[in-house]
Length: 113
Image 1 (cartoon, rainbow, N blue to C red):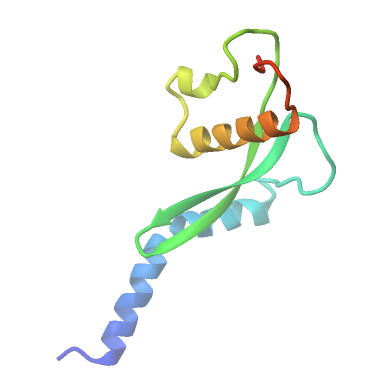
Image 2: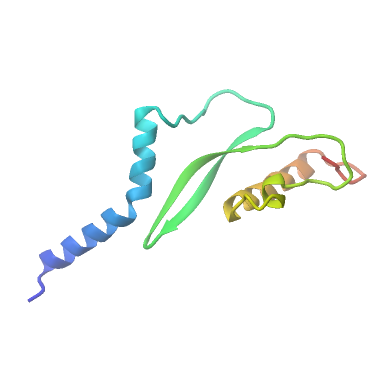
């Protein structure tokens, strides 16, 4: 016989299993192993939010997005993607950052950086 207590227990256990990445992240922050800079400013760095799905739960993890510039003619180059090191989240963040830079640095000629 399955009771309401069994269903509640099964729901709690499922949530507890898929919650492991978020709990691990909170532990790293609480221990000081992982630090998140929220004050001040750095050239070429912004804080972003990586959204991950784990079963029925959705989590947001802070992540740092960095960019450097140099002369060139190819436009914005995602070095991580070119080296097959980036994932979908990094690539999406890169394109968002590139769009922001094109908006902020509007010019009559193509941007090369």
